[in-house]
Length: 345
Image (cartoon, rainbow, N blue to C red; front, side):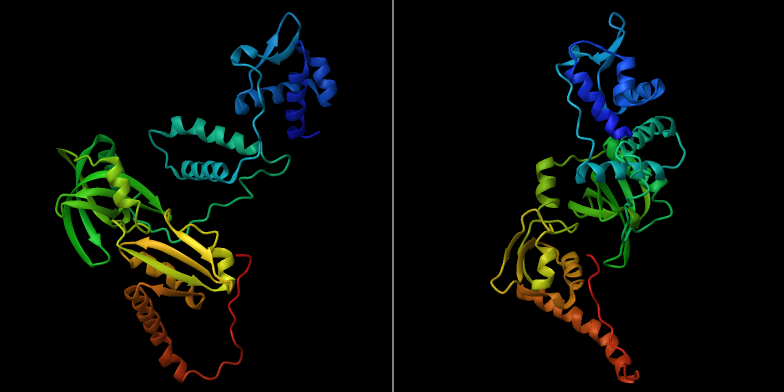
């Protein structure tokens, strides 16, 4: 038996026994030594919260029914969201630099390691077999230090921030007083949702674009949670705002196999067309991020509506083609065509 089997078997024995089970019987039925029996019991107590107690009168082990009735062994295999959450927390803890929180975080790290270790059934464990890959994460030399801590601290203390912010979209810098509302982790980057006192409205700030942050003595303006959800969660992607348009996208039959299972927006609508293509309808306000997502599909998607979005995507494609037109005219004939294919996507 491996440890997985012994945990299930011990649970079966304890559940079926009318009185505490002697250690000798457990050793025989679990086919292991005294030390292994104790280790299995401790694992179940520590990682699975099993209320296993020792009864001196019977010189054996049993479940403590006073803890709330019959104990049920939880499913040991995590579902996708639970596994993602555990591994994400584990990775975040591993990236935390030594500091004041290290003594408090270390037990949590050890507990997560133990939970994941219970999944491996005798192999090297999940930690070495599953990777959380980051894509397009932007890094700021100070993001993991002073700036991020200042922003998070002001958010927790409900104080205003004075930000020196670089707008990549406008290629400009400005100083703004902001009442922080929420920190958002989106597509491997951090964003601050806040009330901008310069613009007198809700805005989103990329934390990596904050060049300086100062906590002010002034109390932050609180925005109702429902208003935040309505403003930031209703439109497409990180570019929030009340949706003013609906994009109608039609994907090729090949790409439909993938897009049909993707979630672009909480209020999206999709349907499979008679010819096998997939039509996706997505509400949006600012088209910038939506255009970027459309372009990555190349000829596998067509923007049907609205006309302004269709023309914007077409213009970007013409500009991209222009980058290659001159080079193609002067280059020698290709000796071998390059074919792009999907590889287990």
